[in-house]
Length: 437
Image 1 (cartoon, helix red, strand yellow):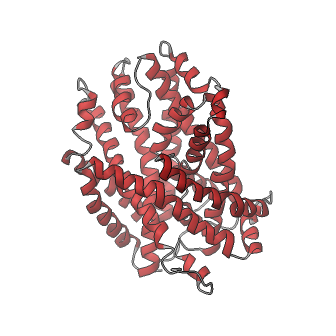
Image 2 (cartoon, one colour):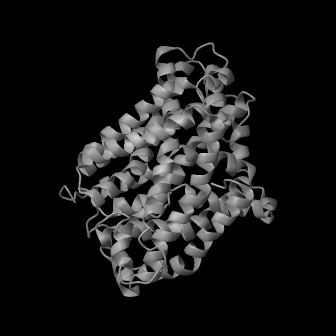
Image 3 (tube, rainbow, N blue to C red):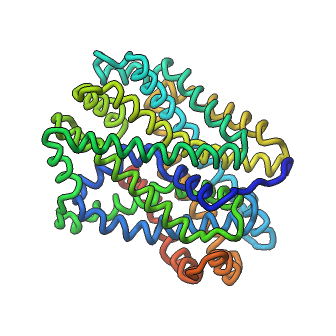
């Protein structure tokens, strides 16, 4: 590679970077709605089962595979060079394209978040009709400058490298995000009738466990919430030292990811119930319902600004992880500097994204194709190679390396017989039911 390979400086920096990659916009507008709709506290039973079988197994696999190769996803080529598999030279391309595709549309939504933050900062959000305000941005040329700003912020962070960029940023913004979430949650829970929102979130509806959709949605949430893709956390693992306990770091990541999702739910849902507003899922919740909530709360402009600042932290930390995958791949393949690779990828993503800026139908179709098909397919490819084609003992030893609790054999078994077949099933379920994540 054109530059000496960096590594995370310590376990905390690595773990917070993984948390930053995992916590994204989906935690904020999807998890709490699913929790309420599909059984309240009862939904947590299938969710935690699938977190153990998919999120934990998948992340341990990705990170340990990256550490073993000391390369990003192009390390697959080295593993497959003596194995007769059709199109083996093309296999690493799919995980790269899938994560680059997520970055391409994700950073557009990141731009909307930045726009809202500045609207609260300047007071431009006051007195507007929120549906019309969002409509004036999404699918319109007005989103382009903010979209570009989101790309530039991501490229700048990545250009500083693993230690001075990715790790340093996450060490700052992840604790700040949790502090902001905590303060906003306390305020939300003190609103009139907020207890109705708490009941919606947590009151067990045990009968929902008999509904297959509850289990399907829990599976999708567990898989997609931590950013599994076969390459995104793999590239972070490639910057990792042998002294880090990967299974323990993954459990901590999954715990904090779920904690952030629950905190977002306890900010949004009780407040929505307090003011009789729709707590449904999707972009409307973040960009229409939440501003309407803050407009009804004393000091709402300040609280709204702090909320969207915390969302900026969540979005940026995920965006830089998505960007790092193609950037590292280009550095690896073409031996160019990190800055040049970041500018190249950022420029290509921006150009493609401009078409999505102007047409929400194209945006939706592009996002669905990448999310429903390419992302789980990339996970099947990347982790399928690791779990099936790398020497069994080598995989077990890599997972156990630096760990006091030896779970390598268990992770390998679950990876081969639960994770890979289950991820293939997620692609089918996504095609049948639409996005389940």
